[in-house]
Amino acid sequence: MILTKHEETKKGRLFHENEKLRIFVSSCSINYLYQVVFLSSLSKKFFLIPLTSLLFLTACTNCGNRTDEQMAQVAQQRYDEACQANDMNRTLAVIDSMEKARIISTAKADNWRAFAYDRGWQRRIAEHYYRKAYEGYRADLKPQNYSSYADAGFRWAYLRSSRGDTEGALGVITDLLGQAEDNQDFPKSTESALTMLMAHCYLQLHQWDACRRSCQKAYEIQKAITDDKADDRFNLTITCMNISSFYFDMGDVEGAQQWLERCEQAFDHYQQVGDSMLIEEYKGHIALEQARYLQATGHADEAAATYAAVPHTRIFEAGGYTEAADYLMAAGRYDEAAYWYEQIDSTYIATDGAQMTFDIIASRLSPRYTAYRKAGRNDDALVIADNISAAIDSALAWQKQNDAAELAVVYQTHERDLQLTNLRFKVSLHRVMAVALVIILLLIGYLLWRSRKYNRVLAKKNQHLYEQMKLREQAIEEERKALQAQPEDSLTSAQQLFRQLCTLMDERQPYIDETLNRDTLAQMLGTNAKYVVQAIRECSHGETVTDFITRYRLENVARLLKTTDDPISLIGELSGIPSRATLARLFRNTYGMTCSEFRQAARAEAVTEYL
Image (tube, rainbow, N blue to C red):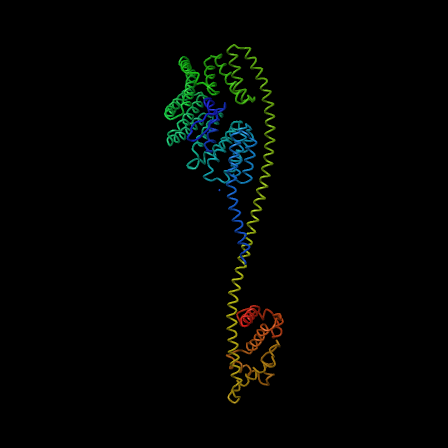
């Protein structure tokens, strides 16, 4: 066993008041390490719609945080009250409500559920939840969660070991101890407990060398803790006593005595600062172990003297009774041993109702029967034999009933886990949808803002281009008027021909014909096409005939865009440019904007002039 029977006397007693640790020790001596780790680990315009949505969500979040803090306080109080009342169903209900409200994480909720079931002796369900908590913490392991993570792993490994899955328990322990190496966040007390549990597993597998190595390592870890905390000698005392018991179970009595001496040395230091009642109690434990070891090495007289020197006031509760009975059985004092076995049985009947299990039969009734029989109390032995037979039937029935009940709860647990998973999925989906809606609204607002900003910049640029276009047209118009005002006899032949050409373009508008070219113009003027080309080049700043015709067409397009609401395609046809793509390309190259932008700029100027 991980702990010797010494720890049974510690059931319900408070020690280490400065750390407020309460250690409950049952007849299964491993429970010391099992409980101490847990209790040591127990001791947040366009922007209006998206901006309003964002502020609303922020306000709701802040309000929700305040509500969650209040709910957490109330729920924690309810949980503490349920635990103190030992009401498992009430405790589980509080845990469920805290998890649904997301006050505690799923891993923490599973860890608390496991502990509630463990206290209710529903070990299979407890093991299920310890495993879930262990895996949950590991999936998102953070420095502040190492204590809970290690505690859940230790308890899961212990329960696996207690039901005979030693290899499985060793797998969990090895994994945890691998993470504990050079890890400052891993709790050293749990590392020591895990190493002791590993030693216990090796003891069950009869791997003595591995058990000894684990014992030595557990001692070194606990001693390092004690060196850092001088008043923590009691845990070192317990560790040495457990190792001593392991060595005795391996048949190494000499090694057991050496470890018991270390236990006495640690206990001597503890007596200087420890609890007086605890000191008196453990003096009895140590003396009874000494008596047992002396008896095993053939020093019967010394063993008897050591046992006789222990006052009965130091032998109380089940742990002390068991130690005394073990020594007396080894010494052949069966009648006295039977007395202590009777005390053990009466003690457990008073505390737990003596619900019969195979462990109880093996630890209480069978040793009592052996003591009666060897003491010659055959009638009492027969009564105990009948009790054992009835207890076996009762244990079988209870185990079947308990297994069925635990399997039903496990099934219900899976159903509830599915419901919680579905609920979390719906909540997560709603949150994702809410966040997506806010993002979409923000994106729409941003795009509207960008569009408005771009439109403003574009409108300003187009207005500037429009003003430049007007100035350019005015300059061309002034040149035409100047040319028209000059006397004909002062003009060259090219200028005279160009003036005739301008008059033709203004009055007859031949450019609306998309087939218009230099030959047509020459024919309409009654001259040679060569002279038309020469006149345009000399009098129009080097323009070609095509550029000259295109300029008139685009001027007509610009005039119609300003003065009509006709479609752009129709305006193009009326101006001799039937192709919409060609019109768009020529207009942008000439004016630096599209036809639609030009119309908007013209209307904006008209509104400005009107105002």
